[in-house]
Amino acid sequence: MVYVLVVHLPADGVESFQRYEEAVLPLLSDHHGRLDRRLRSADRRTEVHLVSFPSAEHFESYRNDPRRAEQGHLLDGAHARIELYEVTDVA
Image 1 (cartoon, helix red, strand yellow):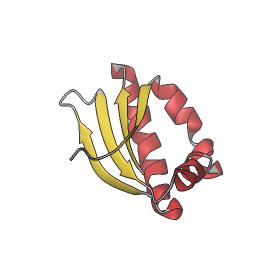
Image 2 (spheres, one colour):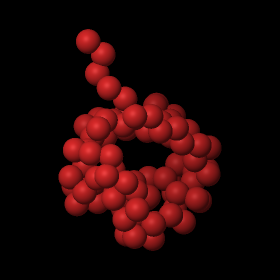
Image 3 (tube, helix red, strand yellow):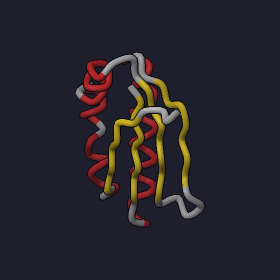
Image 4 (tube, rainbow, N blue to C red):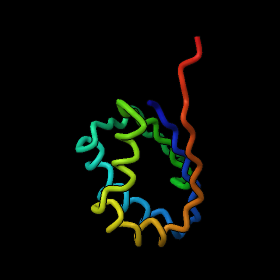
């Protein structure tokens, strides 16, 4: 399973989002997930992640991880607009 996450941030949300990412990205491997690519715009207000998991269940396990939920206040404080897509390779 491959997912693309697109995050749009207001200028005052960049630092809070950065702290959130520092806390939750290390949890990916606990759920057999992998951050394949992380891209950020020059103004730091848009970030794109390409992540993969062996199954949708592994992805849901990551999303429901209580350690991730504990950091939710940082994501809330970032006032991010988030788009999530499940994607596949195009031949």
